[in-house]
Length: 294
Image (cartoon, rainbow, N blue to C red; front, side, top):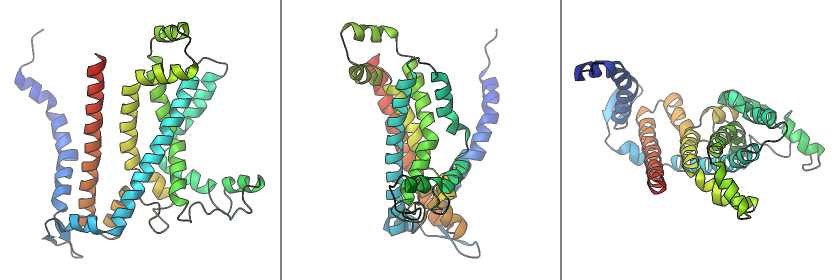
């Protein structure tokens, strides 16, 4: 077989390169350019330099939604990792009905985030939501109106976190389960011979063996959770009083509702920089771990 010439290879990758430029690089470049301009009501642009970035860093709303995003990501991803790891370890053991239970646990993955947000909006409703009805019947609250999950600033962000954990824990479980399945049986046999307990097997064998999988799953979920929009918008639209508003929702509101293209672009640029930084740091840790294991 004749080797492809360099020109043939370039022609082979040309369609993909054009696609990436039109739908990734060019929009990203325009986003950066727009962040240095201010657009008025007549769509006329005026160069403002770094004013949009200064406005973002000095805005109380931006700081609040940034803190909300951090809390949302840390709490949601931590819970998903914990529950996902527990479920993955449980389902790694063969028992009667394991396949059926595993399928049921994976069912939320089939639901779109927007639909999941609407489901939890109805479930957490203070008028007819099943959550408050069950809490009322169990005597934990005095009435179905005792907890306003979506209308109270204290519970709005918590409500969206609950919905996100329910929706994406199966993804974490699936990745960790695949990692556990790749652990050699010889390690378990050696641990049994040494008389290791179940907790020692988990913390000394399972978790260290699937550490690259855990880091990869965390990177994917951190980025995905940070840019969550559908669930938030369906449940609270960022309210009340910005209590559940994330950066993704904030960017959308500033662009679509208020038409502030420059400010929205600057926040989006900062957001992308943070996500890229997290990705690079995580990839470096994975590379270091692989080097040590080899």
